[in-house]
Image 1: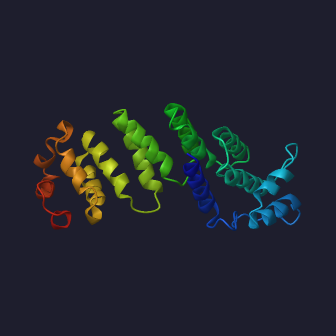
Image 2 (image 1 turned 135 degrees about the horizontal axis):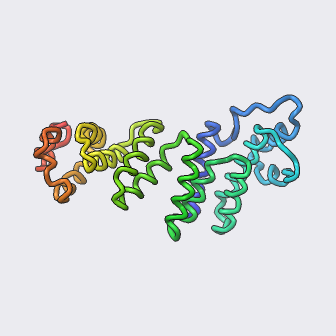
Image 3 (image 1 turned 180 degrees about the horizontal axis):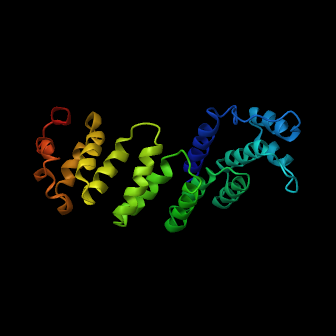
Length: 238
């Protein structure tokens, strides 16, 4: 679990700043904002504990200063020696300072023993409109498992919008959901994307045995996949 939290923390920092060493490179402190400048200097030296030590809970900080504080809590949350309880408290503190990526940390902390609570954190996260496809994918996958295909479709399509690059895994899930909802044209397009570089070929062959997909190769949108399912290569048919 700790490795997952570390992974989310580093990803959050990279998304916000572009590099972990200059944690909030795009955040400019005003000339008179001494607290922000101090936090920025400490962040540059990765002295996150010192940032937290200097925070006065009774003081109103600028938005720029809060970014440094929130990210400092995120970095501390990912340390190996934390207990799950400590990880959670650090993530909650990060949220107090506007570091909404902490919702991902809270999800990972609770995912194994309280999935519904964990998903609740993801739902809170997407309300902040993150430019991150991961929470949408996780929510979409959860709804697929519950056979709530319309909700899954909404989450996965949003993930497609905010994704920074092509994801064969996302296309594979969108293919399945779109097919089950009867949107065969879109499903076919997503299957093309999922099969890029021969990915998901074996999964497609297995899926053809699923009763829900029994008519897959009979539909005009998917006839071209028939040879692939029977053993031909993906590149030869797509």
